[in-house]
Image (cartoon, rainbow, N blue to C red; front, side, top):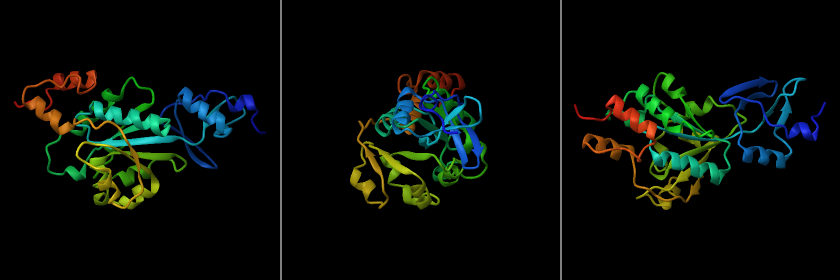
Length: 250
């Protein structure tokens, strides 16, 4: 029996990062912001009955994925997630920590355990951000194409990239599969013009945001020079770096 109007607009009872399987496939369960619920109300769709009880779920999730080594995660990462959330009307932004970032092979990096913890601490307290450890737990190189394969097919996925990362897309493993599966959303970065991104020949959306010249490489260098990271990174990240003596020259 079809749900009534009042049932369609009921608040969902769901949990982050869960999945539900039915004859139609897999759907992701996430807590939804007021704006997300309002959007689905306006569409008059996206709700369905799981069983005879009063349990409902959102059908199509708009998910942003922001991947990186996060060594450390810093305020520009969070600002990128916030900008994408607002400009693209996302339900959630998933920060995926690269377990084995093959593009940075041979470069000095903190352990995947430390980088995962920095990500988890950095996004805590924002209900539409989540830290995701699937690449940390997976053996072998961290290919975004493989990561995308692990998300439900019915999700609308926006891949959030800094312009500096976007120009390197053609060097990614199965990069055309990545572009086909997602909408590439490019955050402006200092020193990279939009024309350089357009030159790769892949479709993208340009999110015109303030270009702030902060990078993880710069922040590691600050610590090595005996300078503070405070306010360049979320406070829990700063405290973790200090407590674990990350990046400090022994």
